[in-house]
Image (cartoon, rainbow, N blue to C red; front, side, top):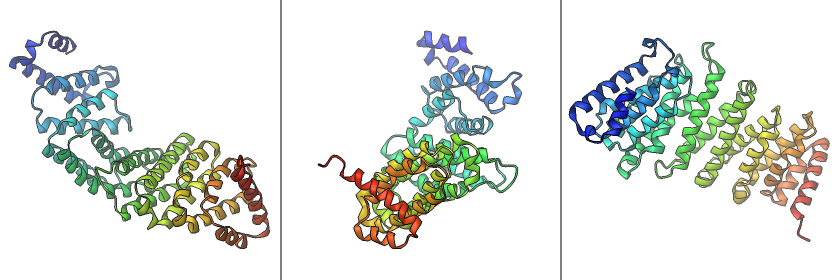
Length: 376
């Protein structure tokens, strides 16, 4: 196969020869059979040049009009490889899939997108998490690769249908056969899809209920705190992804957040609670601070809600055994204090017990030093 490809690359005249193209299609069909049925290969598929051959043949075949059957078959290979390799796809297979979907016409975009929707709807609680999230992987790639106004209009209709399905994929496993590790990997994939849809205003414009549901999915993840504590790297990855979602919502849909301010406060509370119970809080406070930087701009709408977030911080600080936690979170708390007026500050004082009030006065004193630093 490799010699055959080299022969084609050396001779441009052979590329237009019908006999050569027929041989090329046969070889491509053989390679696709091997990728679809790796158990038929005596040695490990990872030690064969199949991804290279597959990518090269797809590129050569792109000179012809690729059939819809071929495009669907390539998509199914990506779905299968995602499951078999537990969420890992060879970069050359990614490249081949990107080449296939890059120049698709609107009809093909609709059919491949409908095929992904069918894969999501077919998944149930007994399916493996990789089977359930593989369709989101392909859809996520389609969002980034598909170009053209008419193609993106079709993608928009698919996005409106797949986003509500994503909400159901954030809940933890209830059966012993599904591991938390797989669930956490699925969360990263689904959150990546959500983040892409938030960023791409030209692809889909979210409604207020969509924004509220996205915030609810973050709450659902962090309320299940035990699985997140099992793997620090996964925990940090999900925390960072969740913070980026909130930042993107504050950038793209601030007015939608005005209508669901309690949901936003609940999400921020979940993130703050996760930091205060984390074994390595310093790695996550920086991401939380990035979120808080966008809040003072909307202080008139959020100040009465964020006041309760500061109260939550003070109350939990009393029970904390980490002496450095206060210093690590102070930059974030200072940004929250920037949103409050004197009225909310006085109101908080009346709602605290003597111990909490003493802690708050210490924090507020540091805040005043930070606030006036360099002004005189």
